[in-house]
Length: 340
Ligand SMILES: NC(=O)C1=CN([C@@H]2O[C@H](COP(=O)(O)OP(=O)(O)OC[C@H]3O[C@@H](n4cnc5c(N)ncnc54)[C@H](OP(=O)(O)O)[C@@H]3O)[C@@H](O)[C@H]2O)C=CC1
Ligand SMILES: N[C@@H](CC(=O)OP(=O)(O)O)C(=O)O
Image (cartoon, rainbow, N blue to C red):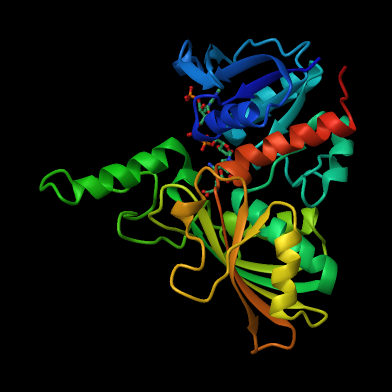
């Protein structure tokens, strides 16, 4: 006996990956519903070797459905997640809407799987921001060994983090650069993204940080340890899929780079690729379609007492969104919603 599973946002990049990953990992699905907006009514999406017709989320009755994976953005989530929850369906939400609510668990299964058990308070579990998810997977085993005091991170985030429109803008703008008269002006992004980088993701806050940077700080504290200090600079780069991060870590205790490499090799969800030669590291195009958080360029930082640097890359649509959501569903199933 399996679960009745809803995927809301099934026509989007994250929703399509959710359907792929549910099938790939053979999540025990008895029945699947693919939901999106009215615009997509009847659109066919793939679920394993089947196709499923998308239904309108408006008016959908969640009664009797066990788990709903949401990837429809904060505004639509605000309207539909409380309806699903009140009808007895556990919502695993990818938007940022509920992440900072103390009564809603924010979960990365490699880091804080026990937190799923708090789902009962509101019948909602939050999935973190894509840049946070991959970073905490790499930080957790190092923190367990040497206690992290402070993290300085710079991100290199792909355009798929901005949804379908982000992908289209990079594609059209790049093509348009070669055809006189077909130049494409910035719309989704604040400046030209083709052949450029933009140090601005999400809105600006009063203190000069962007909301994306603030999210990495607040979410790392909630998921991993509230005592860890994080400072972030989040940058959009002309890459289609795969977020990269240059991470500088200051520990309480000394941690040798070789020991860090060994710890990370054994860590769940991490794949170390770290050879000090041409190509001995992972770049975003190589992580697409994979589950792992790849860690490369592990090295001592001699400018502080107990410091390490590393390079961390993962598929933002997978570990950064859909995979983590499915892993939460698996954890919820194993710990709380046992069937059969
Ligand atoms: N991309 C990423 O790296 C990450 C994304 N997320 C979250 O996931 C969300 C979706 O991202 P992504 O898939 O990339 O975005 P896309 O733009 O690719 O897809 C958006 C999806 O949401 C649906 N949708 C939008 N508005 C509504 C509405 N009012 N009612 C019902 N469905 C609606 C769309 O349906 P339709 O096709 O009918 O318009 C579509 O299925 C994001 O907004 C974010 O909250 C979280 C972490 C990482
Ligand atoms: N903001 C992320 C993607 C995303 O949707 O994040 P969030 O769920 O925190 O809004 C990016 O642009 O790469």
